[in-house]
Amino acid sequence: MIIRLCILLIATCIYPLASFPWQDSRSNSNKPNFSTLGTNHNKEVTESSGLAFSRQIPNALWTINDSGNSSCAFLLQTNGKLLAELKLKDSDNIDWEALADFEIDGQPYLMIADVGDNLSRRKSYQLYFFPEPDLNQQIRTADKKPVKQTIKPQQLQFKYEDGPKNCEAIGVDTDNQKIWLVEKVSFGANRKKTPGVYVLDFSLNSEKKTLIAKRLAGFPPRNVTGMDFSRDGKSLIIRNYLNAHLYTRLDDQPWSEIINQTTPRAVVLPMQRQGEAICFTPDSQEMIVTSEFNSQPIWKIKRTSRTPAETKE
Image (cartoon, rainbow, N blue to C red; front, side):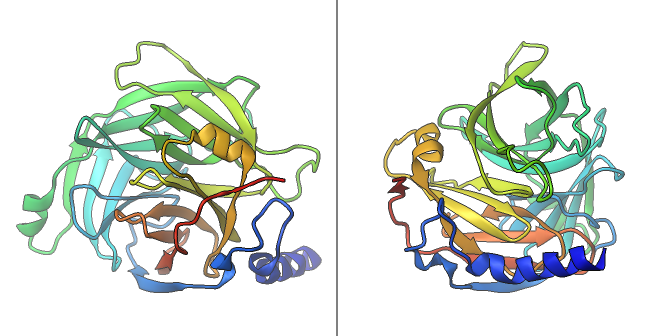
């Protein structure tokens, strides 16, 4: 056990500085460029597993706890102050692991992904989505206490075309009405198994009882814990416990082509205690990351200048 911990510690230290064949080593994005915005001291938010910037409240982030916790979403100021608690009616937190924000026809939405499956035994998975409430007025008059509200979300059920998967990362590509999911495979798992990127066709008015997530690509990094599409539609970030991988596109190049044919750029993340969540800032120029456990920093990471993705050789 001690040997394993030592190996993990060494890997954590050198991984962000390493260059891998499938990553672009010519990028200067391997230079740390981050700072803290605040600290999450809230006893209600003990396992921040998903993250999304609010489209209604300035300088505020939505987050969730994972399995074993209440079916609630929490709104935090970027300095860590708890602003609101949103309870989802008629929903179960079997293993909530990811959170995404998106906009359709001018209406902002949030999506919570009940997609964790450490033993890969679940028959199906759930996505809860709902219009993001505008809580500005309630927050201003709440006398420093968190606003509490209950909403009833819509629900989508899905399964994977090739059997159960563990997942902690989702993103919504609204231009193409797709939900992306990246499989989480542990460091010690079968090395012949390449984690997959899966997509779901998404519609707010879907009448299908169970949707099917189809494999789009392989994604070599292990222990993927979060992802996000930037609001300007030009960037995709995928993280694991150690660092992140940034894809950039030009014009209307299909994301399916980018994930299969281009090389991501490494983004160094700060040392975190089980870092899981990541999202872009509204201007798409920076990223925010949080980690599980209480009293952990909220970090801001500056991205490098937007450069075209390189074609794999």
